Image (cartoon, rainbow, N blue to C red):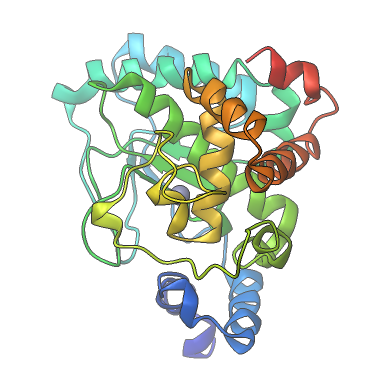
Length: 282
Ligand SMILES: [Zn+2]
C-alpha cells in the first residue's frame, strides 16, 4: 500500500489543479509542490488501449513511425483521469491515416535524433479532447507522461501541423528544463513590462500571427508562459507565419527575437543539426 498522496491518480489530479490555475496566482510554494509532483508522476499512468486499427494501410504507417522514432501512435488511449477523449472508430480511420501521414511529414522535417533523444513515447489523435478546466482543446501535452495528444481533424491541415509542433514543443521544453519550464523566469524577463499571463481560452486564437501586444504572436500566447513558448516555436513551421515573425523582429520587436532564440536553443539541445541553417530552410 502506498499513501493516497503518492497514488498516481491523486498526483495527476493535484498536478492539474495546480497547472490549470490562472498563471497570476502562482506562488513559489506552488512551484515547489509542482516540482514534487513532476518527480512523483509515474510514466505508466496512461496506457494505449488500442495500438492498431486492423486496417493495413493505417497500421503500416503506425509501424513506420514506431520503428523510425520509437514513438507509439495510439489509436485509442486507456483511461486518462479528468479528460474526456473522443473515441476513434473505423469511420475515422481515413482521417487518422491523413493525420498520421501529416505527422510523418512534419517529423521528417526534424533530424531523427531530435525525436529519439526527446524520449517522446506516444502520440494519440482523439476525435475530441475535453480538458479538465472545461471546454475542449486542439491538443494537449501531459508532458510528465511523455506523450502528446492532437485532436483528429483534417479540414485544416496547417492547423493540424502547427498543433503537432506546438504539443511536441511542450514535451521538448519539459525534457530540457524540467519543472521550471512552466514558470520560467528567464522567459518572463523577455517581456517588455511585467506581464501577468492569463486569458479566456475560449476566446483566443493559436496558429496565427496577430499580436495583441508587442512581444506576443497571438492572444493564445498570453495565456501562459508555456503557450507563449509553444506558439513561437510551432509557427516557425508554418508559412506565411514564419515570415511574419521575421517581419516583427525586423521591425524591432526584441522580445519576440529573444523568445525565438530561446526556443531554438531548447530544440538544439537534442540535436546538433538544429542550427541556423535548419531554421532558415524551414
Ligand atoms: Zn499548449
